Length: 232
Image: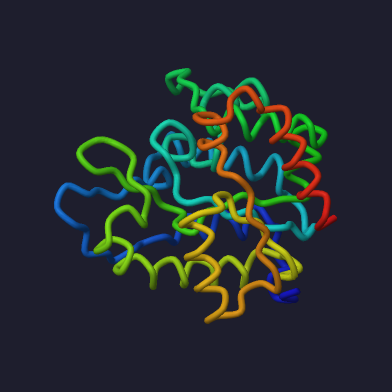
């Protein structure tokens, strides 16, 4: 663990990290960065959330998604947490349009099965390889969906991982990757080069589950909980 990081709370470390994000990317035509932390209303929700669930020095196991989406972390500032779940599950009132996100629905089913938000967020910190999202012509874009964007964003991704590991307390033994395909392959390659973690455990991406395996949601929730408890 980083002893310097232990001097500040986890919430302060997380919020300082998000507030400092200032990528210098050469974006392809039509591509825009989605930064909820630059919006005053979203930033206030972000502060409220992390001060509620992370105001301590307890180490968290990292869970890496791809990048925020327009209807979840892209508006609330909290990964996989749409305005509906933020209000109903986390107890944080917000004035955002109550639009649900598929991935958020699944993640909070996992959180409920794990023991609820307080238990889950006490043990885990959900982030993303790219903490900022992208849109192209008004629709979600994954950082790896455009070859030019992937190449240009890779140094930003590496720097973000390094900065989080330097300031947010974790064991660095095990982390999780949401997505067993491209996101996992890229993360594996970066980890092999930079030795961020001893082991990366892949999990089926929530959106894939909701789109293609919806009838088996309880089975995938159970799979998640069993794998997540491996690191405890």
